[in-house]
Image (cartoon, rainbow, N blue to C red):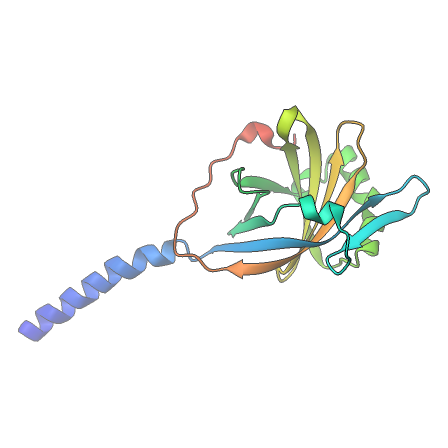
Length: 185
């Protein structure tokens, strides 16, 4: 009788301990470090720098960022001072002519970055001083590389970065609060 009691007791406690650990098993966090950055020049060529060069003024100011993949949802934390923001998949925005035009216009940039077999997401980004831009984030199939193309709404040039991402293992649950008004509509 004691054996049966202890067996049930151990199984019960194991369930109480292991069940919450599996509740967030679908969350995958990746830390992404930019390794290539660039922008178009007036002559039609591109200014490009990578981490192997001596002088990298663009890369020096770019933050390491995080991606959080929770089921079908993808979130971006652009820098440590921001919260995670939800990314909108291209397929949800594909009915909008403006987004289709942007996607088509960036096809040359994708070829230049040698970035294929990826999923595209969009983020309406509100920066400091109420500057606004549209970011297109492309993530390869294995989640190890991202390409971020930023299109400012003001009269600034667009720019891009390519980042290497590494999976981050954490035992803490990541709380997500997002503002639906920041979603591109």
